[in-house]
Image 1: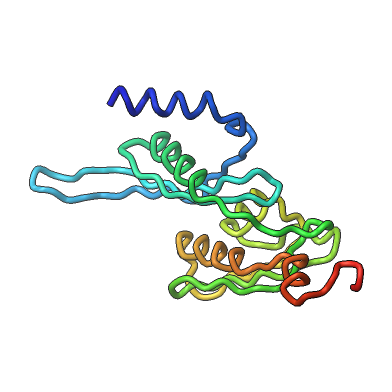
Image 2: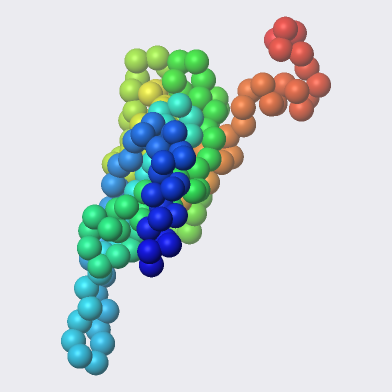
Length: 175
């Protein structure tokens, strides 16, 4: 146990980016397990972490207390970050639909000044990623876990415009 605490402290000390991420709790759920002697209560927390500049991740933490669950969720989210291509006006490069389970999320780019038009879970992800102009619609399941995972599937499917140009063999100056 003591080595795990030392490992966490060492990781925090050597990581200069530790203070750059902003986190947001999307969902905290109380879990009850019925055992022979009664009921055991614990908590699960779904957390999104992002740097506001195109990197975002989500994590699920489970513990006997809410703050511990949130801390575990933040650590998990930092390990599972993805890069999101964001255009110069703070929008997405193209429309995309993410599907996970029975939930699907439609993500569409929007012009400057639109803002983030989204539900609570998708809004937290977009703000953490640094997307300022986007239109979204959550279809199907409203379960926060499915919505978050569907949003991340959509974000993983986004392609950077410069990557598309190089794959097609075009020069950026030609466009």
